[in-house]
Amino acid sequence: MEQALYVELIALALSGGHAVAAPAERQQQAAEPQQALAIVAEPRIVKPEDWSRACKDGDDWDKPGPPFKVYGNTYYVGTCGITILFVAGENGTVLIDTGTEKGIWLALENVARIGHDPTRIGLLLYSHEHFDHVGGMAAAQNYTLAPMLASPEAAEVLRTGKDNPRDPQAGMHEPMRPATNIIAIEPGRPVTFGGIAFTPISTPGHTPGALSWQWEACERDVCKTIVYADSLSPISSDTYRFSDNPEYVAAYRAGLAKLGALECDILLTPHPSASEMITRARNGTLEGGMTCAQYADSKIKALDERLAKEAAGK
Ligand SMILES: [Zn+2]
Image (cartoon, rainbow, N blue to C red):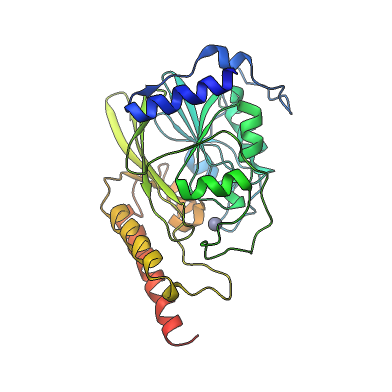
């Protein structure tokens, strides 16, 4: 009942463009945790350079890694191989991506390690509807009772756990555990939660329902714009041809153009290796190195190469 009301509240708030508040009553009704995660009194947050020493490019999706602060309210709580972000607003916390069914528990443990209560996560966001990034969504929802926001295309995949037939990789993945509390959103329209405005940007291509996210993180009076840009790699099953789907390719290019033009101080990506995050972290900050424009350009190039290969019959 309480959960249904909360969904209504959030839907109402989204339609009105208002801030979404996390009601305290909801938290008390949270389901029994499947694992007890002790919140530490002394948060253990490593520096970006320590994370880059603990993890390597190509590390396993479920290899545990230490949590570190990206900037201001934004923390990396993912594994070594998959990015999962935790954003602590003034009155609500958000988890972006969950990793795999196993990885989500490592992320929730990392949230506890940085001194936040993982059961109080109030909102779940995602990058794209594949099991390595949202396979843990059902578990995250059971644990937190938080709703998740999804593009209409991804909502169906998350609700059923099955691939979208329009996904270039359709048929290549095992079904995921279905998520339940899903609110379909309109990309482009900012969503405010916990006092932070997150802008969802429609960036289809790697999947039909992929989203990139932009928000602001501040330290004292210095604010940085963070962009969590989706994977956007033109990977597919053996039978799929991008050139047979011109509308899909047009939407793919439109998303890349939007991404490349975004205000973007700090670029983060679902696979750390895709934007050299581990290398960049060595400097003690994720700021600098690859920009959003360079990242988008690299994906345009990859798409063009893929189309050229298809045209050459390879
Ligand atoms: Zn994927």
